[in-house]
Amino acid sequence: MLVLGIESSCDETAAAVVDDNKQLLSSVVYSQSEHQVFGGVVPEIAARAHLEKAPAVIQKALDKANVCFQDLSAVAASAGPGLIGGVIVGVMMAKAIAAVHHLPFIAINHLEAHALTVRLTEEVDFPYLLLLTSGGHCQILIAEGIGRFTKLGETLDDAAGEAFDKAAKMMGIDYPGGPEIERYALKGDPQRFELPRPMVGKPGCDLSFSGLKTALRWTIESFSADGQVEHAQLTEQDKADLCACFQNAVLQTLCSRLKNGIKIFKKKYPEAKHLVVAGGVAANKALRQDLESLVKKYKLTLAAAPINLCTDNGAMVAWAGMEHLQAGLSDPLDFSPRPRWPLDPSCKK
Ligand code: KG4
Ligand code: ZN
Image (cartoon, helix red, strand yellow):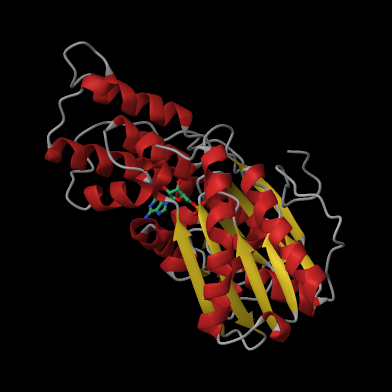
């Protein structure tokens, strides 16, 4: 079986083909650079860029996999949550391909695609504890099966990736901020500035990053003659130290909240083996190291997709599509894209 996956929910236009032997036959990602000057994604520009780029990206994914539409078993698209203009583009293209070539259409929850990617590249069985941390989401869940997730906690304000991006913008560092902050942090002193660790020590698994972001803003403002963050005079070493302190605070917060999650998870599933980290922030190597040390204490194993499959891509959608297809699941062509679509069906948000 072959599944084509299309991703267009944020600023990556991507397509990929996987087979049922877990072979990734192709993966093409066009990262929209159009947003860089704005320091964040502009939804309208993103939707137009998806519309322009998607046909060529899809064709390239088929060519690289050496297949044509007629060879496919199904076509899957990220159908939410996300920036709705872009989501509509990907979903409409997938539906058109499905209609013309008489293929099943599969509407994939973008968060589920992140959550399942690790099962394409590693042997990870359900149930597993999941830290899902990206630009738009930051949640701790138990993954119990396809379409079966129980949320233990989530951010009350910013997502971790969003906090990285906003922190970078304050320091005059390019978008997307996460990878740049990680690079700077390697050369920085994580002890130089004192920053808070939000929610640490409280029960439960909810997270928060807005207070940390404000504390960082105050620290940066102290480098500015007029108190304006935009006028801060930061040397490269100041930036590196700020990045190291900020990254450390985010990582310690995530690990501390996960500790509570692990205890709940182990109580419910004492035999389960894995903590999975997924989403764009999972590309952060320092986070992976910290999580490795954390899971060892609890006799769990850390599992994560390769770095290039952590940020948005088509392979995660194609693989989630394959898992749905194998479970006998597909969707009608009148499926409406969903700007909001919680992974845990009992949650309204
Ligand atoms: O999953 P993703 O590509 O898109 C969403 O679904 O949101 O995640 C993008 C987010 C951005 O906020 C980006 O700054 C963050 O992931 N990110 C990182 C790293 N690479 C990407 N954050 C920290 N460290 C990284 N190496
Ligand atoms: Zn994503």
